[in-house]
Image (cartoon, rainbow over all chains, first blue to last red; front, side, top):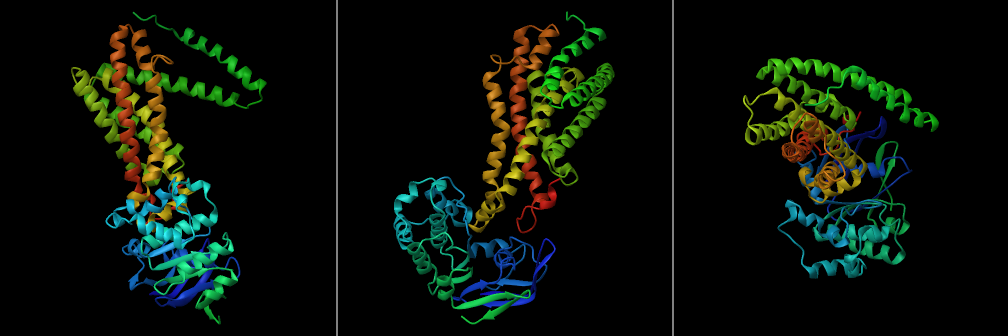
Length: 213
Length: 260
């Protein structure tokens, strides 16, 4: 599903990864660990073409990342950052934002599906009428996840998503993302999250190394 | 007829400058040198332009007029890029096209459809009308280009979120295009709404001083205000749209090297 072959990554002249490989199969739940500054979050950004990589190939669902495939690859992946940006003034507009773009105009979600998705993430439907600036970081993360679920994305990149969540919200997020049809590549220091993952990958000496769960 | 100002009376206006200079010295603002230099620069530039325009008006040759207009456009374009914080080498030709197209459409309409002078390239109409349109486009375009690109740079995560949610580059830039356009047209809209009450516009004042009847001057002023507004919007949108290809790479990332 996701294949990194002999990739080398540099940022501002600093080497993060050197000719290293990683293969992620469908339904895998992978967490990347390592000391801060080793490039864990950057690795996620490289795969979606947000940062330029210097060597090697990145393939997602058989498509090699290039200028011609980057839009298709981005469309298959949901990226949930530490502080997601909702990109609209009201929560409802933010949730429905992708359905205003040509790529998703044909597949508007029903109200029923929206409420079901919110419920699954322990979000009160009243949140839809709130201004995006007025909701907490944890709620923002769950709205971003709900948006990705409505888009029916099957690959999730999660960068420290549980850092701002209370126990109940964290359990809801884990329940929503750790399902068999979702492939997950994440960065986390949270023991509960790491425990829920099927694979742990560490960045050691600029290489991606499989660690024992 | 207008009362001519001789050199001494023009220079007498410099005496008034002592008031703001005194204030700057009192407030220790350090603007004295800039004020004096800018005033001298303005004086020299205007005298040179006055001399040049004297010959342009005497010759009244279509090609000479066109050459002057091209020089004005190049200067406006360089000023826009210089003040917008973008590298002029990367954008020069693209923004020049934006400025040219917007000024050409509006000036051609104003001169050929509204005023219809004989000959149509009469320097008395062509040079000041295009000059006014360019001067105003210049100010608004600095604002719109700067707001657009700094808006994306300062909200990179939001911009990438749009791309990740399936937006094309044209869809992802839309919010920043809206903000940039608002920043350039809002002052123009406010200025149109208060025109004649709060301020007496320059072109109208100039015509009245030159001996024109107020009603005749007003008609020109309405024409030029509408023309400036239209040219401003066309130039701002064109400049942004035409510059996208140099500002973003193949992965729709904003190139950091476009900024000065």
